[in-house]
Length: 543
Image (cartoon, rainbow, N blue to C red; front, top):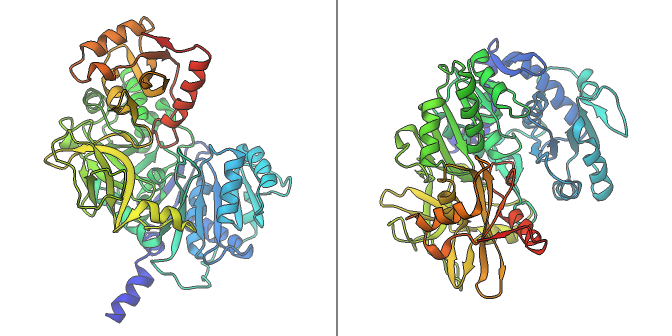
């Protein structure tokens, strides 16, 4: 077994898979940047990454050292992701939506040797550097022509570097950390998730199995690459591992995305449900040729049945929906043959995953085999065993590792039911649950009901304090029709067979938009803060 172990650990790496494609598909287009009207073959991409890898090494960003990225989707993101792996460093993309204080936290937490950031974020970076104790040795600014404030432009940083392959100081190992992602941080500080090369290989395999994806595909991801659903779902990780072509989309625009489909022969689009809604609206207006599309993959929240039917009719019959976490990628999946019958659910477990719904105990930790009834009614917590795609730890955070992982399972704090076929329906989160007059109420349950009203475009449900009930259900509504009233919504809820009368919202407010995080999940924590202020200021309407 020793020869197998040595070969497996040395050669079964993400970088080796990418390098095979450089050899196999040297003249094939690897990446297209429409905004700059540039493209790279696999051979040209590799030379650019070699230059950047040498620059990283010169700054001490070698084996185990961190290269942090604060970038929108752009070629330099892809270059950095590959170059860091070439010399054994750890690529650590962070959300470009972070505040200066949050960026300072990430700098002190991961201590990057190099920070690569977009010119549009220079003010945030400058402020974060003043706040952080750790200062990266090199600050590389993208899309800037000159050096300023101690920053070096990306062009200058790589200009004089040799493009020959680099020899890493430590031999590659498939169990080495290659990428570090931060959780969304919707509750408290984000946690650093250290992904190994084998996690990245098997995440790519999951995409190649479930789409499926091959070297013949052209992908576009409308979500940010700093998130796992961006990087690992049709982003640089699986696309370059499969030998496919990546079309870079810096900022989502429905018309632009649909134009690119026909222009570049895009076969897979990835985006959150709100993106699909925008794409469907635009396609109904313009009617572009989408015949090259093999599928659209969505994550972040479930698809409602009527919306799913519309997307299948307007965009493509092949709609996919995945559910998972930063720690585990996706772990349940809905395929076109599951839809629209199972729309609204998160799907059932992926091939290599074991996703369960277990009972909730207030006085002790639930064991993985304490399952709730598979009746679609009993609510429990979702737990995930994902041995291929999860690192089973957080970086330098043993307390959170102990709290979230137990006996091979990640305890997600997501609340759900499941049916006899183990299709899981997400109800909400333990933190978001509303307790009114002693009854448990789940925001997503009410959101699903309110979204059925033809004059509702979207909604988010939370609660505000009440002396009698403890909490009162409060709904924020984005109108699809300006004639919609609170009284009309109240009557709709009273008549709905899908919600008990005591659960219906008592407060409403109409808003132009609701808060989402970068992954398309509704920010219930944020809306609860907003609702409290709105209650104090008399902005909520009582029915």
